[in-house]
Image (cartoon, rainbow, N blue to C red):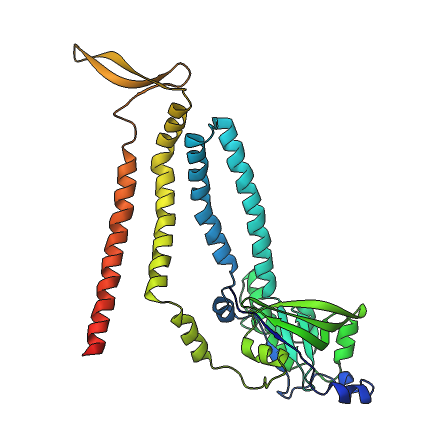
Length: 363
């Protein structure tokens, strides 16, 4: 069960802001490093076990061979699927999987374009990266600082990578309120009911944007750099001290225990062998499904070879033709032996290494 924590939060200096009739919120964004800017972080994404677009694609590649094998086993032992039915079911499930994959990738890519910001008054803002920010104070040169050719992809990379510089350089002519009215910022105040989970944080807040003010439930994925600063802010604790990057890396590496490494290797090797099984066993599994469905009959057939009449056991079908019993099912053993042999070598190797480490520590 994943741990969940709930907190109550009050924005810093909220009462003073109300007394001053909101004058503080009219203050422009300054160059002084009083704001805290949190951009997307691949390290935090990995730390909180949130799948990236690359991982989603890998999951899809791993899923396909198991889908094929499961359908073939269903056809063998549960209900026979003819060729057309098999193809239709396979294509249908694959198309649905592709749609889910594309939605997941779009959501994953969308994370790169959001930034959280806490101003000097302790107010939380969320903004979306766009060309707009680079046009303020004529900072468009940051969209291609090296003056290299690379098209939209390189331009997008610089846009995401340099957004901190842009936000720190915005002139005093633009205020938070103006940016909110232009639909460029969302402001979160009166934050309550903070619920921190492993992959996301949820809270209730008064959200101010171009359409006005309203109280709503807000969900933020924990993919922003210095995640603990954001969590401390939402818990109404000291959030101004950033977390040590070395400690974050150490925390990520601590999760890689020998057992987890073995499970990860086994799963990866199993996925590779699933593709091998699809290539080597699909023909035999297709024949087995037809044998079990009664399409093939096992019989003895007399065949002439080198002037001699030889009796051979064959599977015969009026529609599907025939094949020798001895030519069928030769690859099952090969796949099983290959999988087990590599797995045993890995287990022996990792066990011996752990044993050596324990002996060295004892000495």
